Amino acid sequence: MISNLFKSLQNEKQNYLNAKRGQEFEERILSYLKINLGFTRIRREDLSGKEWAEVQNHVKNKFGTEFLDLPNSNLKRTFIYQPYGSQQFPDILVFSENKVIPLEIKFSSKKQTKPIWNSNVPRANAFYIFGSYEVGDITFFCGDDIVSRDHRQELYGFFGNIRKLQDKIRKTMPKLDITNWGFTPYIRAAFDQRKHKKEVVTNFFTHPNRTKIEATAIEKISLL
Picture 1 (cartoon, helix red, strand yellow):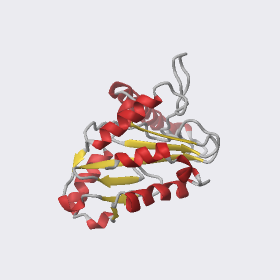
Picture 2 (spheres, rainbow, N blue to C red):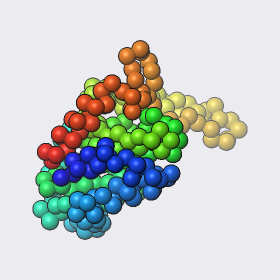
Picture 3 (cartoon, one colour):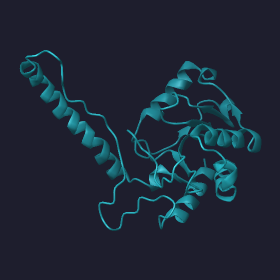
C-alpha cells in the first residue's frame, strides 16, 4: 500500500514539485498518505509510554537493520509527523499493517543533486525521499541500498575517535588558557558525498543505479 506513494512520486512529480519550500513538499506527501492511502495522522501521545519507548529505542539506533514490528495493532495505517521535531530524524514515522517505517524527506529549492546529510548518513532500516525544485526531479531509496553496513560503521566510528582526541586535548586546555576566555576545540559531526574515485557518482538523479534502487525500494516497502 505505501509503495503507491513511491509510484506516485515517479508518475506525478509535478504535483509534488509545485512547491518552492520543503514544508510545502512535505505537506504534499502527507496529503497523499491521508487522502490517497487513507492513513490517519496521530500524535506521539497516542502511544503508551511503553510503546513510545520501544519505538524511540529503535529509532535512536543508527546501526539497526530490521524494521520494528508494530507495538500495537491499533496503530495500523497511521503516522506521526516530525515525532522528534523539525530538525530531527525521521520526518515521518509510518505505521503500516505490520511495521514501523521511518521516512526521511530531503528537499532543495535550488539545483541540488544530492541531499544535505548533516550528522546522519542513510540508515539501513529507513526510506528516503529526495526532491529538487530546480532540477525538477524526485527520487527515493532505502538507506540499506546507499550505504553498506561496514561503511556506516566506519563513518560514525571516525567521529567517535575524534571525540576521544577532543576529550584528551580539553584536559590540557585549562593549563594553556592563562587569559581565562575558555577557548577549546568543538567537534560537530557532519557527512558529505565527494567524488573520491572515478566510479563515484554523487548525483542522485543521474546515478546509473537509480532505476534499480527505486525498484528495490518499492519492492521492500511493499513487504512491510
